[in-house]
View 1 (cartoon, rainbow, N blue to C red):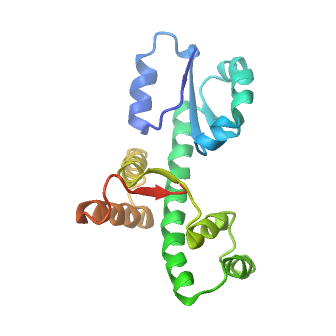
View 2: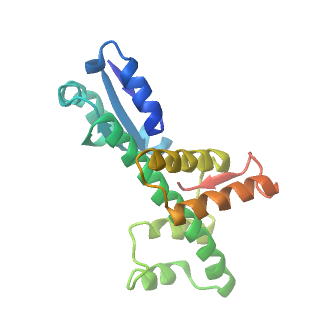
Length: 192
């Protein structure tokens, strides 16, 4: 059995699956969450491939965390890329909002409570609490985040979705930060 946990683009997945001698022994397993959750057996996983392969791998997947069978390899891959598009955009937005909240000295718990009462309510507000207070751990490099978003855009285009303006702006913002030298490889995108 091969359980592929890498983040790939749609074209890469197609090349891999078309080259397999035993495709029934290959399972796409796109991971969510981070190292802490991995060590606690609380990963989230988007699974793709043959249902029979998924069923055979259930004991392993159960030990790793929560999983949902999405469908094909391509569908599970797209689900992961969509998750990255959403998560990166929200982290970027909340990072900017946290600067404003710190500047005006609004208590972080009061800010979260107030925001959760209106149109800004989102399950992702927990990230703002960390960003406003500076109580977050580094996750992965800005270069890696930008690479994954570029991969998501290219995969979307290969599926016939040519315009994703917000994701494209997010990608451009990350490229600009990298090129400006204001963010070195050693600095990290936090809480993605």
